[in-house]
Image (cartoon, rainbow, N blue to C red; front, side):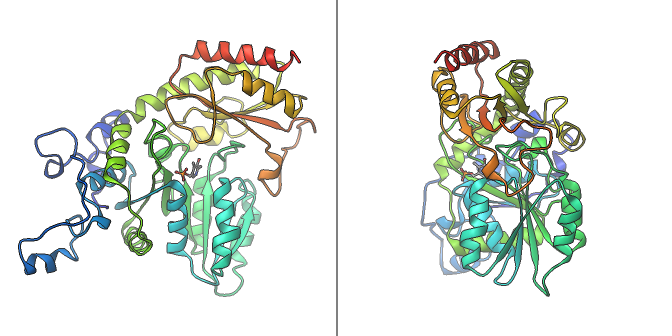
Length: 408
Ligand SMILES: *Cc1c(COP(=O)(O)O)cnc(C)c1O
């Protein structure tokens, strides 16, 4: 389901052009623009010799589990977007990508360091599945580089260590210095994996910034239309080949129909992200000035605690951000969210439609929350995923909902 091509030939183009060009090889698309949806488990061979020689060929028909041009084109497109990647493996979900990457680089007795602001299922993977397989874990404060380096150096004997990074955290939106965290890991011989779902390769070139494996939930920005689940891992040659072997051993496949949908989504990802980010920024400024709001958490927003790092390391953002209500209770927050008409209430993000969910930042992290300087009452969060609606309409919807929140 994967194939390799260095992204350097298209890396000189702008993001929109790269998305249009990505993965469109004539041998896969023929005379049409997009690769056809190749549905098939069995591939037929001319003769026994052809059957035998197909077994070891990369990017050639073998059996449905290794995919067909529909999936190869998507993997190839993602590789060309991730500078320095040699290949990309596709998975049936983002969680599958994270777990399969961890199972690729870790063995019993090894350790995984997980950033304390990680996506919840990643934390659960460390404390559950990986623990069952004899892999130890430690959570670390992503903003405390010294103690992170100390934990890494204290290897507990000969155990290999890998680190799982993520920035910004998808609820608390905390930034961390990913290039520094990855460099420290490399110095100590540890492999770094980064969950790059928020920014994606257009917003944060993860391998170029020193990470070893770039992970993404394609369910979010790449799919972009809330109609599929998929994940990916991109890496340099040797690691890519190991990721591929693990995916094959686990039997991970993605359907050609979903791959075609993801490719369709990918073509418009840059315009969607640009538009969402602009709308989100407008709303973030507006929310920041409202009495009901204690804090807006959004690295794209000037003045945000993570803004400087974001500006230094990132080339883009997305429409996902959070805010913390000032001095309200859970019932008031529910009135606010329930009163929204244009925002759906539901998980996931990165679709064309806006979403809102409540979250409580306190229990997500082991430590360092709430940040210094916050009032004790600042603990009820709302996360917004901004879609493609018009900013003015979303703002009116929120205005109405704030009124409903305080009307009871
Ligand atoms: C959604 C998400 C995932 C998991 O992706 P699925 O495709 O839903 O399995 C992983 N990381 C982050 C940051 C996410 O938001």
